[in-house]
Length: 73
Image (cartoon, rainbow, N blue to C red; front, side, top):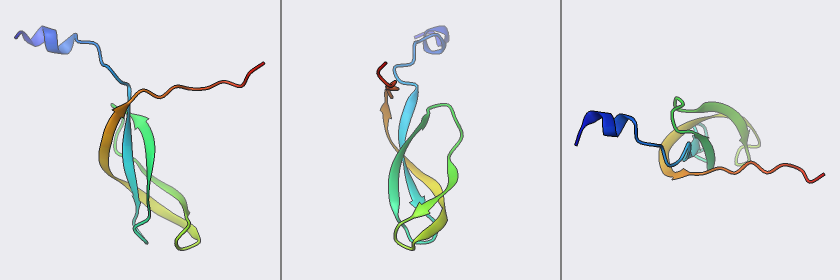
């Protein structure tokens, strides 16, 4: 197989589902991010402690095609 075939191949999905985990309590939730983006680290409300906390990306769950829905006219 030639290297050009690998580099020019079309990507099947542009997004990936990742597991986010709270650094304080261990609460987890899933979020979508772009496949080529850096690992996520964000501040989000943690329901287990009742206040904002830092969440870090733990692992990639699967590739996904995210469809953006628009409001009907």
